[in-house]
Amino acid sequence: MIQTGTVIETINGNKAKVHMKKHSACGDCGACQHGKENMELNIVAMNEIGAKPGDIVEVNMETQNVMGAAFIIYVIPLLALVLGIGVGSYVLNTIGVQENVEVYAAGIGFGLTVIAYLMIKRFEGTFNKDKKYVPIVTRILD
Image (tube, rainbow, N blue to C red; front, side):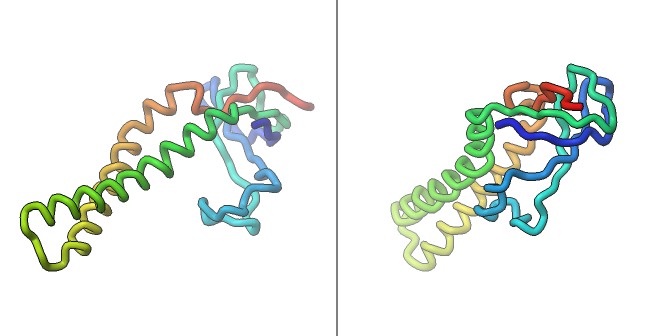
């Protein structure tokens, strides 16, 4: 996925904060809650080509890596929720709980979802160090 943006600042010499406009297809799913009314964002990208503030640049992140990051952020917590509800319901029925099984199972599912998000947050630094999940400034257009 290749996008263009303007460098607004450099960070530690090897990263750049880039002001970008989202792709026209972005905003339809509503996942980020920005929708089509806020089609601009700032990202931090690797800047190994030495772009400076004011430069218009091309930023690239491989589509498969974007899909991998989306899987980590959206699917893993969803799986934790479903697994928590299913396993929680099974275990509660097995140990003989008869009242409010659905409520307790939902609580277990939500608890596992929170744990999944906390684990993702804990390992966020590891993902940021892995260059395949970090956007890269690939070319200065001006």
